[in-house]
Image 1: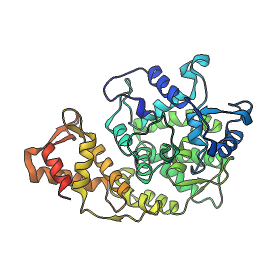
Image 2 (image 1 turned 60 degrees about the vertical axis):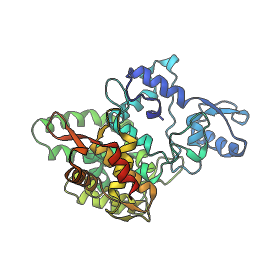
Image 3 (image 1 turned 60 degrees about the horizontal axis):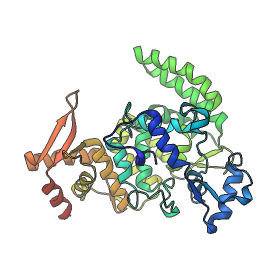
Image 4 (image 1 turned 90 degrees about the vertical axis):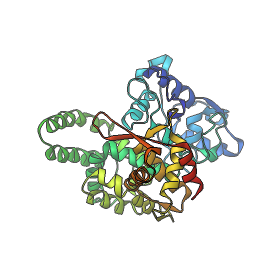
Length: 377
């Protein structure tokens, strides 16, 4: 929802993007007659402090209409606060642009949409969601398999070193676990991570650990390492209201494979798609046959006005598109290898630019070649 109100080219301030997002999220929508019972049940369980005279309610915020969907694995997460009454820096809405910065969906400083943010929008099952209609069949909080893969990639790339230590500890627990257990294991995981670091990184980790202790006690850094992974299929709520969690079927294998990889980066490049398919019980099979078709399809979705797009995000969208179609899948590393093979085969029709570190960063594929590669497969 945040990415849908961000511009790919025109920057804004934190207050500006927060205001746009808050306006969309709290837009009042009439409660559909056929959904009234489940909506009121959700309000009673999760938002009784937000609405008065529940039985007479006619309209609710858009976020609540989506969160009341009984198909969701979790109904927590409604954002609170009013910009005019408390100031935008003191509302929960302001936290979401920060999350988007950390997950590289929006650029820091001007909050414009990145190529990764474009990937997220491109993965919508039926194209861009029309929020003015608020149709439940395209509920943005109900993630499709490709979106679960996408968010698993983003979360693990950003926070994987800590998450894999935390989840390796959590899988040893024999029953469901709540914030107290997770807080204890999170603190130990931070200490483990600190011990493995050296030099300046270790000193920085020590500072973060001290600051994190207070946040662990208040739960502020616990929920972000649980609730998003409920949506992604690694965890499920053991209780619809209480914050109790347990692993889903297949999640223990996912956690084991994540910890068996030599690094989080290796897992993301070589094993994430296969593990996501196994986690979600998809019928897709691993194959390299159609990679160039998915590269061309994804390139046509992502390219800028000058024809360039990020190689990594192009690969991420290609894998996501393959999971959306549901027949074949492949890994990010294999996509990037195929892009290089296209360069060797077609020469100047495939061009690259480098980043400041001298690494290949962006790719441009001649339009006619992209269309040919897409059509022939």
